[in-house]
Image 1 (cartoon, rainbow over the protein chains, first blue to last red):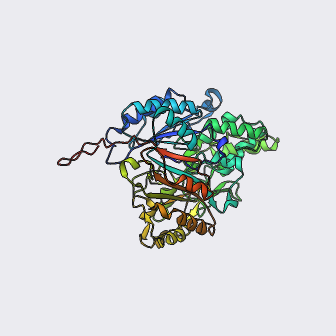
Image 2 (cartoon, chains in turn red, orange):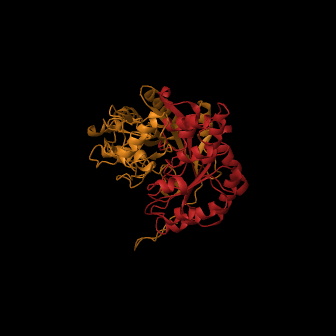
Image 3 (tube, rainbow over the protein chains, first blue to last red):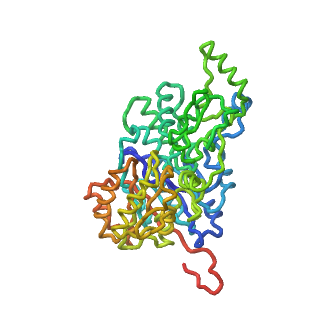
Length: 230
Length: 275
């Protein structure tokens, strides 16, 4: 379900990327877990997540449309996002859920509220370590276990340019192709596509909902303005 | 994965969508998939929106527009004729999907994604205990892919260092000998989007293990995303971050389990509930 650890970027470029998710441990806390995961998602909605997903074969709020026709394309227009309520209704076991925030404050308020309810599910945060520690100290939580990202190794010549990598690694399962991210950057640069629209096209490929559309928009906008920052 | 040539209109939208670069436009002007490069991740099949345009009228229209120097250009995420089809997969090719499509659960662990929970449920599983370090060596990530034969070289080298491979991991399930780290021979030529070699050792061995991993992956024609996990103490501190920093690693980003998981399932009859 999760694929959030190895997001490419320097610390100052990851200041708008905070992911929180629940996991169920089969045989230990899976009974009744769907309702509890829904509670997690309902609380998250109060803090304006930029992406939102529950375990389901249908995907997160950003999803492809499988029955387009001329009417839907040219009269009604594209409908690239579904309601969070639908995502919650479609949840299937195991009841995993993921939300992405673009603001540290939102994550803090969210965790504060999650801490107060007896969720019983494992909750993980994927973010800069220093940002988490700052939040943890303020709201009185502490990490149980921690998994550090040590970055990429091996034949790094096979990796694409930094802006492309910053976009594609927001789906850690690798479902956003470098060539598609490059195409989106080029179209935004050529002003044939708005950064918001390009970010949504990419978000639809990430089935776990870990893609941060807000950060993607910023990267695409910076690419348009010819900044090399990732 | 395949392209239905009776439906494809040759718009090429699917070409950049493929994370492995397996789709190309063939000599007949229609899309084709290189089956050796394809890892059955289902991104093209599932991730593209679809229209149901008919092949012949659409190709005629495209030709007409091209004659007048105009262009037929569907939105970049659309397959206008729904031409991508999913094949029935058999062993060992079915492994490609199991390791590459996050929506396909691994039969060995019953978990989707890369099939492992690492320390994300450590408060319940005790997978990595105090005094131990967990390692996740994720081959093929980001966006390059890997053959199991390359993973096999590293797993064998690590086995010589007496690491403890995580039994609840789909890659461990492919080892015919967990002591030697050798993978089954019939899977070695299969390629996947990514897979995680997961193991743990005594915390004191961490520097040697990391040096061995670095030496081994330098010889591979793929990329690796490296992760180290640890159980925190009662203050929330851990014993590895300073050491990682002193070894030159940028341990500035992490996945942090805040320990809210509880045993909530009713205990089986005759057993006491653990909380």
